[in-house]
Image 1 (cartoon, one colour):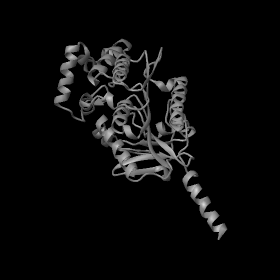
Image 2: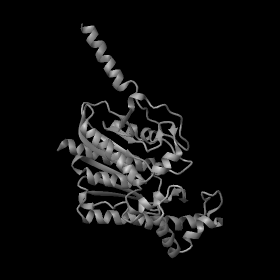
Image 3: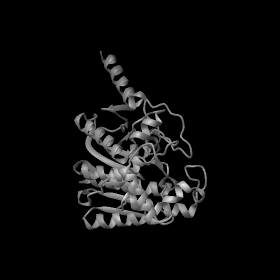
Image 4: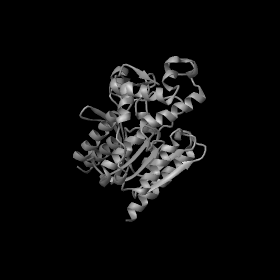
Length: 328
């Protein structure tokens, strides 16, 4: 009888920890990866991935990745794996949420683009969080950590404000901005005009009448964005994003700074086109009484992943917040 109980216990441990998502730091390409079936979950029609830590009790980190473009759509599992070890080392679980049209290695581009908006991404995360609260995983202490990068930044701003009573700390990399999407995009476009990269039509931006025409002047730009608001279709594109995406982003609500009641780390690079927007976010948040730590990184652009030193410093900050919680 004792041997049978031992065998059952070992099988349980194997089921919990033997077939897990593995950490991986990708570089410029995404590797093929078969997601363990035991790590794939579904809440309503939303697919998500969950990695529990080896701990009796733990918080769950909700990790939100950046934006996607047609022709460059990938599973969130790569983002999940990239930061998995850092969170597991803190004895925190990790959850990432897929977008519509993606299920591991299966990508339905048409379905993805039809549903790809910030608001839809936020709703998917809310669905998962409500499912967790209704059916909590074994060992979860009911608390969240939030980490968002780029487009994931506005999502964790919203989630931190909505679930403030359950939040321990938030990290926002290159996504904490006070300006509207229309304003931030204008600054981004001015930098694009200087850099003159290849546009979505496979020619230099300065040689593309389609891309350049709306950004010749701010008046032209405003008129163009107004037209997008009147026709938020998913079949027309501007700079690789659908009109539907742009219209939704322009309407996405700003964070209520007074609802940020837990430690919040903002990381922004001085070479990022949204640095002024980040400065304004931090100033307004602090004026509202939020516990904001600001890493304003000289010489860094929008891409935090290029700066492992900044990533390490961010996780050291998070560790200190969790240690403060345990002491209290």
